[in-house]
Length: 285
Image 1 (spheres, helix red, strand yellow):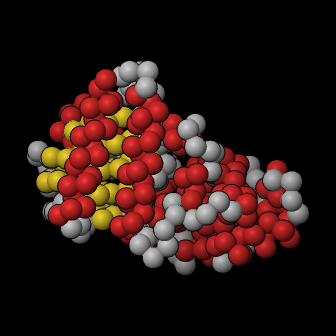
Image 2 (image 1 turned 30 degrees about the vertical axis):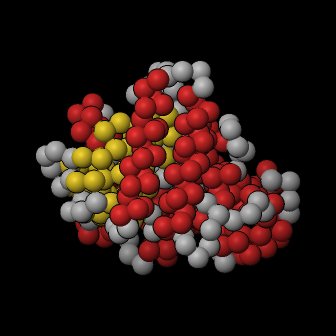
Image 3 (image 1 turned 90 degrees about the vertical axis):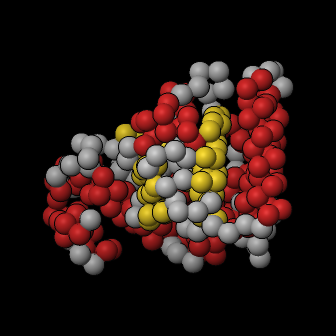
């Protein structure tokens, strides 16, 4: 276990493209060993596993690699990827910046499957597998070219990949239309990620978004069935669990890291949200 959770950035692995990476899973486990330790990434990771034995852990979820799978890992999740021996398939990593430069700042938010916790595909038809295989071959070829046109083409290919994943993960509700309300809630969630340590009240975020607190609550209820306060508390709770599970920080240190006034306030908050104390949660992991 690490004292603190490491945050990985794609610029550490590719100085040419900086915000995009594709490689074979064999290269992945050999070259990018730091990605096999518990860490947060500031980029999206999509694992296309053809054949492998191992485990992928994403926060509290554990995915066993006993058969072909596609696994989508969002930025900010604490994840570990461990293969036992050889692995065949590919991994794609890309930042939100890489994708949105071609489209717009919020376009990723309109893929419904990225808003759910179900981001593992275990069953595909032969034609679906062939389609992904062809797309990945084209993407890898383009990536190796490193030409001036490659970046735009790679963004287009990633867009196609995301649409295909949407078909498999959210077949009933294909990508949502651009929605001002949805975009505002997405902005709110992004702000929570950046400011949850310093600011824990909805009023701060409403002010940043140039709307009233009541209006922010209304938008959150409409789009997520939760209040703005619920979403803030949920994010802080998830961060608490990550710190307890993946670091050696003491309860007092975690309380300080998350901006609580005192350890007792943190313990009270955590028990109210989870039902057990932080110490009990850690012992159960």
